[in-house]
Figure 1 (spheres, rainbow, N blue to C red):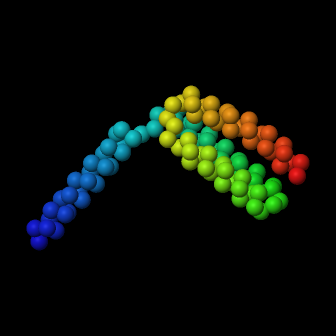
Figure 2 (tube, rainbow, N blue to C red):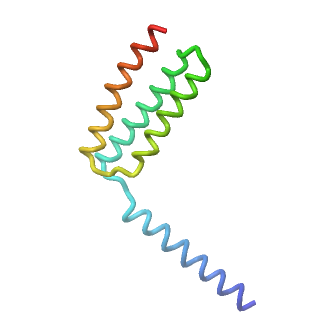
Figure 3 (cartoon, rainbow, N blue to C red):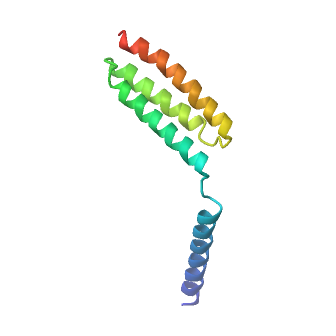
Length: 103
């Protein structure tokens, strides 16, 4: 019985600490939120554009490459760096779309 009470207290303590720290310190700034939404929108655009690739293997590789690039830069928090990566990604994808359109 004593063990159960200790376990319950520890769980409550952990849950309280985790939720309060997430709410206070883990909130995104407005600029970060906007950049995040732009990145997600761009990723969706890439996935929709990949539907035009006729070869299934090439389509999967392209989708995997895009996903891997996003994962690789997942922890970037500097807004200027995020903007740079998004701009560079869009430029590269525009060139790739012209190539895909010619297939």
